[in-house]
View (cartoon, helix red, strand yellow):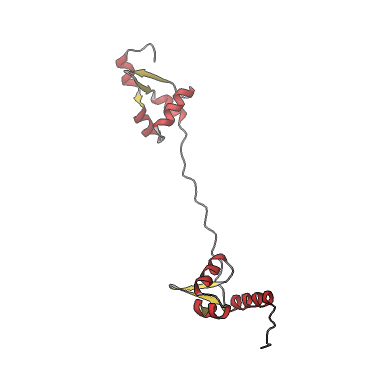
Length: 141
C-alpha cells in the first residue's frame, strides 16, 4: 500500500469504524490489533485505514454458542400439605420464618398459585428435630 497515492489508498481501504462494523468487533479492539501489529494499517489524514482483505484474514467467523439445556426441575413433593400459617403454628414460628425456611430448603413446599403449601412430612421432620434439641419426648404431656 505504501507505493500507492493517497487517492488509491483511500479507494482500496476502509476506516476503522466501518471495519469494526464489518467484522462486528469494537473499534477499540481494532486499534489494539493495529498497535500489536496483528492488523496492518495506514494513516491517511490523521485517520487509520485498513485493507478489507487483511481484515477478512484476521476476522474469525463467529458462531453462536449453543445454550445449555436448563436442568429439569425437581419433582414436586407429594403427600398432604398445610398452609404456611398452620406450619408456623405447629413449629411455633411466624409464617415469615416458614417462608424463609422454604427458600433455604429446610422445608419442602408446593406452590399453589400465589400460596405456598408446606408438605406435612417436612413439617413433622422439623418438629422432631426441634423436640430432640429441646429434650421433649413425644406423647408425654
